[in-house]
Image (cartoon, rainbow, N blue to C red):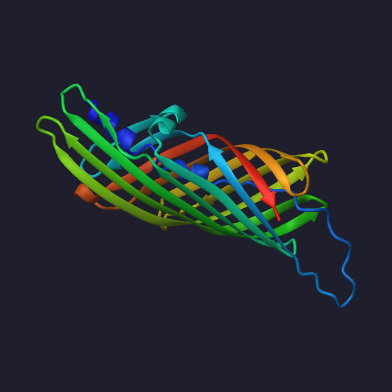
Length: 269
């Protein structure tokens, strides 16, 4: 029955933003001269990086008493239904060793109306906010190159509204789901020329505490105009397997992989 297709369209961003939880990084300046004895170096560096993600979503999802629905959603479908979206990455580094990152991504698909073969309408709306917060320690540095271990959390907030008016199958559902996954990972950046760098990051989380399991892998190139401005082209994949453990109309599960290219512009100050 084509109703499953419309439910899939209602849920097409349930893992969208994690792929948008992007580690857009920058190149720190060259290592400063050694600090004189008895003098403590205290320096703060900040980065702001808005970005754009073009994701593909594949997997399975289930809402309420509706059957599990297979998802295979293209970037074109997502952007066609997008009402509003905002994605940005923030980072702070202290003394070139201790750091913190915050990634916020919001997406509103508004309301889409479709006409199934049986006649009638299905309206779906999705609003999603995903926030990532990590603390890191740079355990290796050599000039502008570095490697970092980090740990933190990924918070998901989803509002899903589905209203169907079809013969013998009318219903209305509103489900709000929040969960926070613990995450650990490593990342690093290496300059192979004065202007070009390669970046990589990987993390795992959930561990059955909230999600059964979640993971992410990301990599790409950066072009650095100078020490302040940089352009990054990367590819990221994020997987999640979540089930709220409820039955009946309140049940919600999501087992997907979101992957796609992302483009960001980083400003360091």
